Image (tube, rainbow, N blue to C red; front, side, top):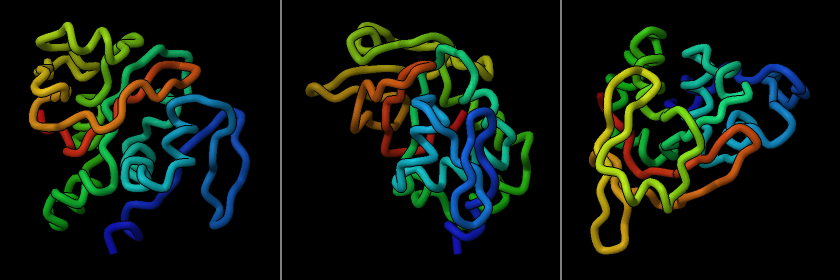
Amino acid sequence: MKNLILTSALLLSGSAFAGGGSMVPSGNTIASIVANDPNFSTLLAAVQAAGLVDTLNSAGPFTVFAPTNAAFAKIPEADLNALLNDPAQLRALLLYHVVPGRVTAAQVTKLTSAKTVNGANINVSTSGGMVMSNDATVTRADVRASNGVIHVIDTVLMP
């Protein structure tokens, strides 16, 4: 049910229609990578519901700490549904996952915090060779996009 509720309407410029009438961006933007990776279907639906497709398709550059479907599954279903039905709160939450500029893993490991697009800071730390952003572990770093970089995380960041 979560995935059914979460799958809505992403991307814009340079888009091609895919099955079900959803739009899938072409190219190698952050939005395109998220749209074309099944591990990000919940993130895709959230980005669509928050109206952030244009942002993640724009020139950027951005660094996105991208939660997987498993990360979203950690949120109780009622809380997630409430969030998806509150575009302003959802937008603020998602923008908490975005840092202006292209920040690679090598640069992230030298930080203790980073200011997000929503204005709040996230904590950054390293332990045992793992990079943490707040309570989330970076499970895959430096997924390069034409408009930035994605670091895959295992937990949704809560402001």
